[in-house]
Image 1 (cartoon, helix red, strand yellow):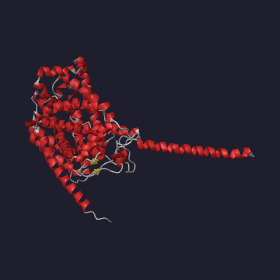
Image 2 (cartoon, rainbow, N blue to C red):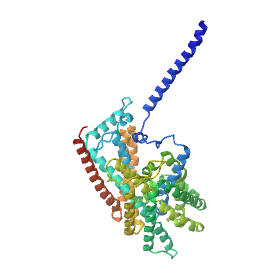
Image 3 (cartoon, rainbow, N blue to C red):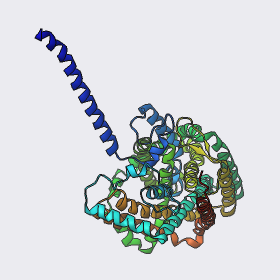
Length: 502
């Protein structure tokens, strides 16, 4: 009898133990999910059905690789064409992150979930936490700091949008570089013909934007891949044929020797050297169209290796791009180069759409129609009004400047200004949000800050040679953005004061 009872009781005990273990597992999962560090923007977007956050491992590798392929045609169109002209002569997102983790916005923008993701919770007292808390408190209690942060963010954003005007212009002026090369062969085309051909190319480029990043990326990516293969292959050819010992150029001591020999001329030349990295300022703005992993894959496996090989091989042969091309490949290379130069504008155009979308969410830009062009990824957007305004501005700049030299000077100022302002906001984030060790912050300021200020001083040296253009663009855009934001804030507080309770 007792054995029968025991037989009946054992299953009950086992079931009880299983329930206890299941309950503990659920508590552990909840604890882990609570302790996990989230981005508030991801939490908001997670409310959209079928959403995958940009850093999520839930995305299948097939999707990541597709996005990586598309990103080649959209993000790297600008930086990959820098070899053509360099030898010849993400700001709002950071501000938004600061506003979400500290009350520094002039309009309350924090959401309920921000209190759950704050880095100021679930941490033991430490010097880093105290330092972050002090900085956070000072920013929140200073109206001047809030206005100053907004202004420099608007300045950086305006410079990027202005960059979106300059990039298409200098990219399609690849034909001008061809004309310089052909002059030596006494078979050049006229400057007026180059300008009108460039304008026609620009108009066609902006007209295809309405098809969306998804279709544009799939269309442009194969051309950019062919371009990378060409410039990388030619770089290897020149490297092997002329002087393999050029690899010693990676020794940083040669930079010191260069400045010792050339002194002021070396400093002035930095304004031209910076054109080698043009396009990188669009990378983080364009991340909204893709995933972080897809951008990492395309950058490390395709873009960076091809550019290093191209610059190395070109340096061995000549000071202009076309002179470094073997005669037998000149025809195919020119066709691909023209196509790649046209596509080069895509990076800044897509980046401009993303930045304006961010500006709209913070009430810093006049309301415009935002078209989501992809059913698979919500970050891919198209803004018709901005697209056609950019087109008109590009046509005006192309017709007015007519050469790459002045546009290049203007282009350099825009790029370095954006990078310097972005780094400034990043320092705040490192201290206040990431709570980075203060030694790393100081090292970052001394190394990165010094390099950026050195480049900025060099590009400003050519202010009167076209460098004033991006600052003029930025001034106009800042006035529009600040007036709109000021009215937006007054409207918000008026409605708040006159709200009728139900």
